[in-house]
Length: 246
Image 1 (cartoon, rainbow, N blue to C red):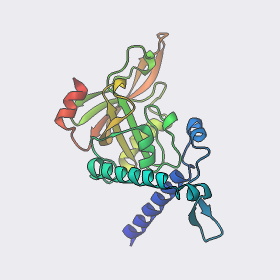
Image 2 (image 1 turned 45 degrees about the vertical axis):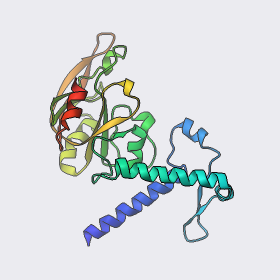
Image 3 (image 1 turned 90 degrees about the vertical axis):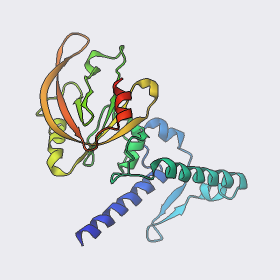
Image 4 (image 1 turned 180 degrees about the vertical axis):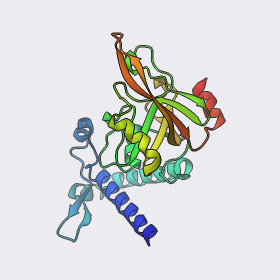
């Protein structure tokens, strides 16, 4: 009974998430809001027991033959791409070693809003914490962001939080507590900024060790930072492991 109840809750959350995306309510960045400001696909009809209806503009344009054909081709392409690349999903609706953007991850984890523009290296929200790592740091970035993130072996990753974070801070304690409270932490890595904005999904990780340390900014000032050892639930595939480290 409890399992069935949880399954219903998950389905409801997915449907609400889909509605937010199609209604544009999921958009958060000002540039995205401006870009899609004149686009309306669906409306929530409060006069028909909460039914979702097609918006008038969408209803009118879908009658145009050219638009209808292009929309059909786009849907077919999306379904084919899903079958080829993303059908082998794990319990988190992610595919190991496939590439995702920060925006993709916000959507797939069913976050209420697109927080990708303010996520940066990681964000703890709704019981999930995606971590995004660029393995090779650029030389011209600030000293306080030259984190020493690296593999210890193919199932252990040494990761640094943001600077100015101490062990007793809320975000460090959330990560530590995730081992016991069921929250999930996900690791995403790209080799360098030259690869674009997408990251390889490395799977779920669990913090096994942590220590307070320091990092220096461009003025030579010492800043607190926390170093975590993360255990990957699935050992990294050998070819990808060697590629990222080479």
